[in-house]
Image 1: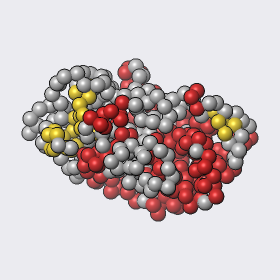
Image 2: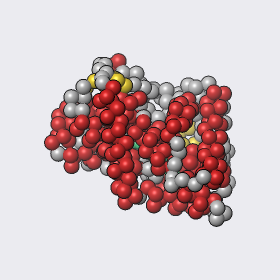
Image 3: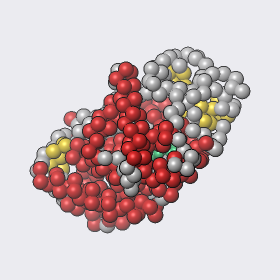
Image 4: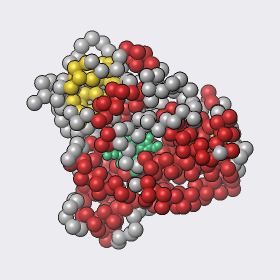
Length: 408
Ligand code: HEM
């Protein structure tokens, strides 16, 4: 049984989470933390202490070690927002917060839906969505905000089509996702947004029960709920996770990627001349930006475990700093350089171990098709505002640009 609940509060460690101030870099403090050691103590907003993992090898160890759990209902589990209605909770079906074997059962229901083969079959549909958004931008004329016109709608439409969620509701679910992903939102407002979204997805499940469609949620209803394998609540929880993870992550990565390529014209010219370089460039973009950082990587030791020479006791909380691990000089040469030739596929932007991103093949396909099409069809695309003046989503759980004004 756990010998302690939470990391003992010793000294006055740095406040966590830390803030990004530049679109191309993790929080500045990460470099010093990484030098300090692979495992460093931090202070959460509640005053509770936690460990953070700063280096690549230890990050991978933590993400793959069965003695380290992701179940937030356990005493001592770390939270950056104790007032959230989700703190210490795990709604039914939220398998990102489950350990094996419970997690495995959910993952099995979904794995073939997100396989390389299945995602390749979706490529024409993704291409159609991307082309429609480029048509809309060309019709509108520049300057316009690429986040609003392209970055957000592409993954949002794609995940709606895949799940069978009506895209007509996009403003509803996108605005509530933004509200609760913002770390500075008033807790009451954030909690209301989460409850509304959960209610929306419960209603969606009720709707597919009445009127089946050809989306994934409806299919899971027919194949798993109707057979008694899954409850309605668990299906709504799965749909919540898939809808949020499916749009908010890629929506930030597309504009960040466009910005990086515009700022690296030599790399962009190479990709244009040889589109075969694009998949490698996408891996580097994922590593370099690490838009999903610690927020997905909350963990707790359930047995005593040694990490980077430090004993972590059962009941102690750990956050993996994915954005720091992806800039670890022990794992990547010249880690702060953007280099499309480095072969970055071993990055941790999608995590590692049993929770490694279920949607990674979809995210890669969306990024490849979006970037290739955008630069092909808008060859003179350029920034309409200097980089230093771009508004950042520094206060969001998933990093991104609040706006990317472009013209052509
Ligand atoms: C898990 C990142 C796109 C669905 C994760 C994790 C990361 C991540 C880091 C691991 C969390 C952990 O270890 O606990 C990203 C990034 C994306 C992206 C950077 C875009 C560039 C997507 C998309 C979907 C998706 C498009 C589509 C549905 C999921 C799901 C999980 C997950 C369901 C939980 C997997 C599990 O617990 O077994 N993602 N993701 N993600 N992602 Fe993604």
